Amino acid sequence: MTVLFYYTLLFSSFEMFISADTTSMVKHIFFKELNITFLIGAIAYPCLEIAFRGHTHWTMSLAGGLCFALLYAIQAAMPDLPFWQKAVAGTVIITTVELAIGTVVNLWLHWTVWDYSDLHFHYLGQISLAFVFIWYFLSSLFFGVAGSVRRICTK
Image (cartoon, rainbow, N blue to C red):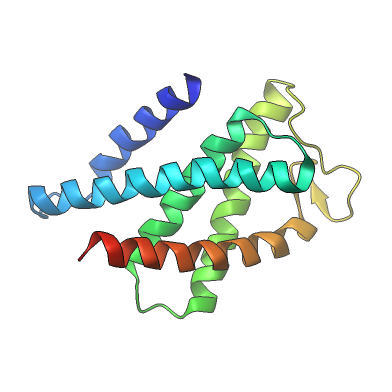
């Protein structure tokens, strides 16, 4: 239920950022695509986490959905950007979302969803250099999926 609340809040506020000069139909199509990609990320990321860690937390659905929707927006806005640059942008986005959500759920709310304090080159135990490389690889995969979703939705 909480994920649904955040999902509604995210996309109702995100719709305001879509340019006012675009047509209503274009806004509707892009909004639909963002919904689809949010749901893909909200399902895929927790599944990946369960596969590798053995457990997950509902906030990872929010993080995965938000990250994938943002990666999709980059794919839609800059389709000609070189793939490696998209992957770097994706890495920055995922790391930033991880830091933001980690700060709230781990540091402020003390839910201890994850803690990277035992890893070298971490920041506040919420992000780690080791995971930056994983996010680069993961964002590369997601950009491939985002491109496929974009082609399917724009046919």
